[in-house]
Length: 122
Image 1 (tube, rainbow, N blue to C red):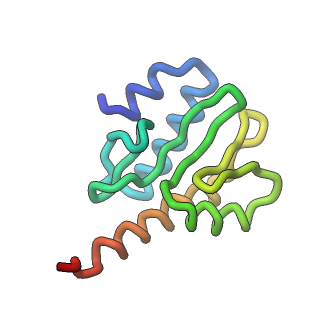
Image 2 (cartoon, one colour):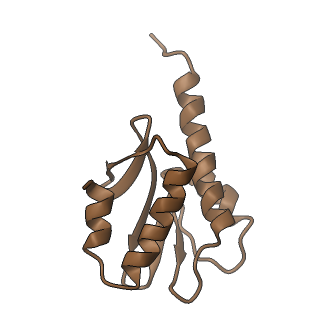
């Protein structure tokens, strides 16, 4: 088991099912992603960089794509979700729509691919 799988297994229901659902969706969008950590959170990593983390909190859940630009772009298309510079919050009563989650993951994956395609400065 990896960090994300272990984190999910340690949660109670309904959080366990919610987190697993988003993990599976992220893995379908980025099958090369691996489990790891970033900023102290269990996270999926893509090409060695943090891709996405979904965590349970006392108030519900937060999803972090490790990119303020990605958050800003996706939250602008959502209505009624609280956000911070780094993430979007949702609850058991109102999950983050699949399309919004998919946009977070695919846009972050695109950022990582673009950054790694750039020639390294000497």
